[in-house]
Image 1 (cartoon, one colour):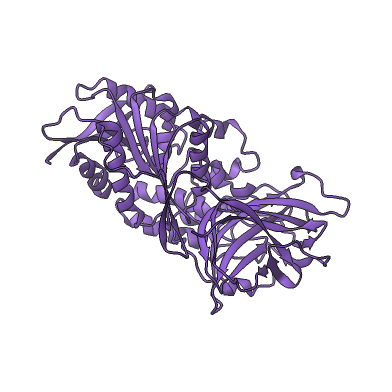
Image 2: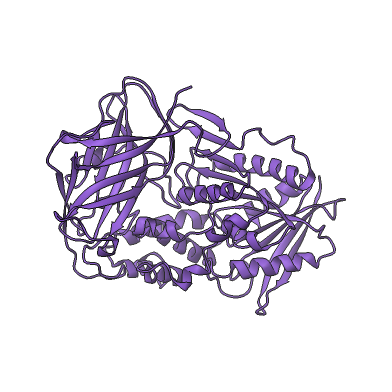
Length: 528
């Protein structure tokens, strides 16, 4: 199907700023259903080819708009802050166009998915469908993961947007991670790392640093649309990755829609955030979704709403819901002599390690925004004295885990300001230990007083997973107090995040006995 492109359409905002959009229209179908895509990354090049021409050739009109402050659109980019008002003003503009048929859908990954959530509860019944990939209705909890600070992801994204304002094309995607790596290795205070990565202060990065101590402030209220997800009436399909930085909060959006009586679709594959492998799957599922909900052709929809790739088994599975039917929480307890077993531990002494912020515990792999987050060999990390490693016996049979993962640990620290990092790994018979999922909890005195012995009960939410541990493998758990540079160092003092002041080492004890049964809760599913 031939496509006609109308470039640089001016879209007025209530404050006088003008945003620019391109309209891709299939020739001969001037009032075809509209798909709105709002992006800070431009509207031409690969984006225009994939989203604009790609969908228009399938019989849809596509309106690709550049968000405020970029690629010809007026104003200044205020990440996350203007998308609600600007998005609704764009919908109002759509209604006035002679080619608008009275209904529209929205589409896009990452920030483009966030722009969908920012208006979806308020756009009215004309919004018929949404296709959201590797995204969520709020980014606050990903930035302040577990109360810590997602240093690498936040710095790399703010550096990326700065580089894109000066360099166009795909080069920015490769340059930003290199600049970020240089900054996190510079030993500068967190508040000064943007000076290394970008050469000047980055407003959004500085805002993230400044609001870390109290994320429940008006700054975040106008950027968090998770409370209204249950009000979304549009039909929603979601695609995520087991190693994506936004997966936990994407699944919360799914559960909110389910609790509201909606029936969203969900696909989770073995992908990370910038993984090109999820692109073709997303495009195919998006096309089927929009054909179903804009054109009434349901022939491309699969029967089961949930499709998951089970790593370790190498299989795609279809399910009616998430969490999957038949899943039951199973406790695996930390044991003496660094064991791990599905039975309570006997009386035993705690294990100990020292974390020093001047030499922070590094991370190998794990979910980050702009880098390859696939599982990696952890043996070098496991040899460190500041990482406790607990391993099961060789499994006598396959074990399959699909669902949410959490840990409850009993911890005593010499300073009340300390992070608790927990990681789940699969150990092959040859010894290779691959990380599957992880989580962190940053502790402060505000989390409540310890018991009479100074011990605190700590709950850590890990990333969800879908994985089969094969017979002969081992289940392994790490406990540490750092994962640098994925999360910023905890200086142990309670000073503000941006501080470059003194650092205090933390002597940490992890208990595992009948009175303090530290354990992971794993989502066990029966083998078919």
